[in-house]
Image (cartoon, rainbow, N blue to C red):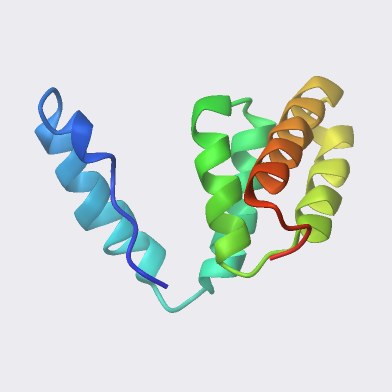
Length: 109
């Protein structure tokens, strides 16, 4: 799995944010041996959905599919969190997942 990076287009306005995103978040936290990238993706997707952080959610749903989670596993996680984080949050997340899967032309990772 290639290392992830912050959008370089943001470096003009917030170079330090891009730097720490690349070096600390993706270069250290995501690379730690305690959890697999797959597990980190599941945690990240469900947290973003629960907190209604929809701007970052699409990116991380796509990353989760690349990191080995299936559409079915992501849908199950989102369904589960509906009862803890709210129905609207889950419906928004599942709608984004549906769009990503349809655009990629595949049903599973």
